[in-house]
Image (cartoon, rainbow, N blue to C red; front, side, top):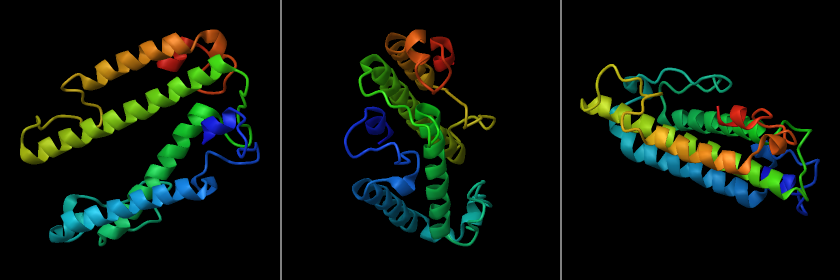
Length: 196
């Protein structure tokens, strides 16, 4: 949605806060709510026999979602995940596209829009891979197949994150010259700062 607003497309006026999930068009919001519902069903199916989240060392939801108390309910744990996921998404979009009410409109700037799109792709793919690898290593700790001293948040035991980062860095360097980045509000105004 921010990309559509950046492109000056009809139906995406500057008054629309594309960084907020509350401003999502109904079809997109329904997709988000459907994903959250599917998480809820999955958690119910897989976690009923565990008892309560506290039995899995899940004790508190991080800020700004810390008002959600979930130690006794897996349904509330999913609400915590949804809240944190929305916050992470909003923060990433603000990094990429600027903070409302100062959206960047680049209707006729093909190079700038290509760069912005590449930054978005890099952020999305790296986040997804880091999360997948972190979950994989954590599950390995449970099974005893991952070394006990592994930092699952930052580990890259198979080098997949480094390889993906290298590919995406080359993409950004191709699409985001320093001159192009100086026209944007995201991730610094030089190519080196964008890939850092």
